[in-house]
Length: 313
Image 1 (cartoon, rainbow, N blue to C red):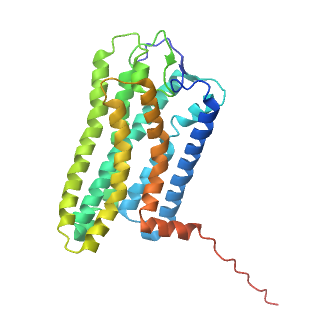
Image 2 (tube, rainbow, N blue to C red):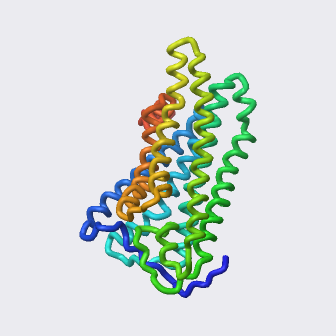
């Protein structure tokens, strides 16, 4: 990556219009961050320890939990660091890393939701062939593919952003390094690159969303062909958690990156919800609305009676 910059560090100004609220925000965001880590670690523990959850759907959910652990960890530690009264400076390499890993993990989740929709499509539309189509090798390749495409997507955006020269202002009017706020500091015309980045950031989620809608249109059609009410209800319940998670994930992305007139304060507020609240809600969505997960979670956390063996004299 060619670096013409004389800027060696950036300064994160934080969420606009929140001066004097640092202590309250620190406590609030730290609570969100801890709940996110604990909730997703519990989901991982339950899936790994319960043999009845060793299925493709829960394999992808396991990968989603891993992403939800690392996704908020891209920006939250630094944000909590300066909210606690420490330096707001971030190195040039640190800014590049934040932007890369943010879009890498976000892109991976975007592709992963598409794969999870395909998994539900096969399970409901082709139940007798499900174990053949979604065999272990296919699941592993799909999981690997989400990370590979997420990496390609992020590498393109990061290269696009940091090939620009940064030779003067270094005040990032945001709480982490993201494409729009960093490009604003470039000492060059960014209009063409902003358009390319806008198309890329917008196009990838829209294509994934199109495939998700296509999968669920077939799923709904298949469910409506089920004659028993109980069967339809069971089929819908297996998809409701995934649909809820998709809506929560896509709404902030569309709001932030596809609006023609950005608002720094509003964008930062929605971005915080996307970075901290959404990963925190995913374990609740998949556990509270899923009997298998709730049962396995209760089994994993239930205290076991101690058995004392009498000594044989």
